[in-house]
Structure formats: C-alpha cells, structure tokens
Image 1 (spheres, helix red, strand yellow):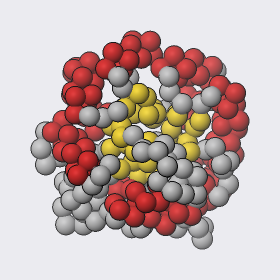
Image 2 (cartoon, rainbow, N blue to C red):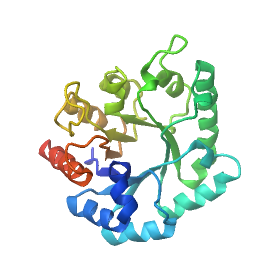
Image 3 (cartoon, rainbow, N blue to C red):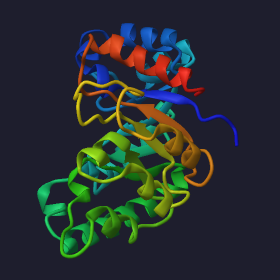
Length: 250
C-alpha cells in the first residue's frame, strides 16, 4: 500500500491560527506536514484558503463541520464551499445531546448521516463522524460507536481518534479492526494514563499496531495529528509530534 500522508488538525494550534493563519500554514508546511484539516476558517472564504494552501503545496485532509451545515438550506452552500476548497471529507466532530442521548437517538442520527452521504456522493464529498469519549460508554446495551457505525453506509467515514477512545476507557485497535475500510481518515492523538501532556509516541497508544491496521485493512487515506494538551507552545508540540512520527518511520 502507498504511504499514508500526514496532516495537522488546525484545532491543535487554534489560537495561533486565529492570530495569523497564513503564518501558521507556512510553518506547518515547513515542518513537513502534507496537509491540514480545518475546524473553522478564521474569517477566510474557501477561495482564499485554497490559494493559501496551493501556494504552500498543502492539501486539504478534511474539515470539521456541524451536522446542520449539511442539512436543509445550508446543504448547497456547504457543497459549494467544500468544492471550492478542494475538500472531500466533511466530518461531524460532535452532536447536540438530542442526537445522542439514547440508542434510538443514535439510530436516528445514523439515518440522517446516511441521507447526507447519499446527497453528497454525486458531488465527490463524503461525510463522517469523529469520536470523543462518550461513544464508548454503553447505552441501552450497546456502545454508541457500534450503534452508529453498524447502521451507517460504508461511505460514512469512521474518523477514529485514538486518544479520545482510550480516554473513554476503550482500546483503540479493536474498533479499527471491527469496521474494515471505514477509517478513511484517522486522528493520531496520544493517551498516557500518567501524563496528560504526552506527545505522540510518549504514551500508551499501541502505535505500531495502529499503523499496521491503518495500512492494511482500515482503508486509511490520511493520518491527522491532533494535540490538545501542551507541554510546550502548541506550534512546538505539533512539530515534535511530526518528528516523533517520522522517527517511527511514518
């Protein structure tokens, strides 16, 4: 399988990006990241963002978007935005409580995401869902993660966040193995029981097993670094994460 490129989730450096997005993107490219995933656009339109990225040779690995931007009257505007940006992955990173407060709510949300996926398909865009930790606490006899992904179309992306899953008490590897071909983009986030500021490679995530699964059965197209706790300034943290990944042969 071809090498999987590495992107940065810009939420990791959100305060820097809010002050100077062009400067941050320039630094991210210098570090050696090949792409970025957005979680907000810092006041820039899609064409401007695309131009910034093109000038630096960066790709779009995805965006985090509210589910409401993919429904109703917002749908067409969102499609235009993502197509202009060159984005193929519109990932929902969280849900209102009403969409996740029971097994039936999760099933309703799965149906909604299936409908969104079907509408997006002709436009060359996929939607998906990104976990936090709540999806790994049993609800009505089943983990919400399984309720959702067992009832969504194969093209609904399972954006698995390794650190968030472990924070929720789950092991990371079995969920990647349980849904082959679904983890099109994967958030690489460390988890360490003894160090809440651990960087990638410094904690308890079984990285070699994660990489082996992503590079064989999981269907992964992008690795996306996300760091939300900081032993150093955020920009230094994400550079160290990338250096550690390169040290692991990524």
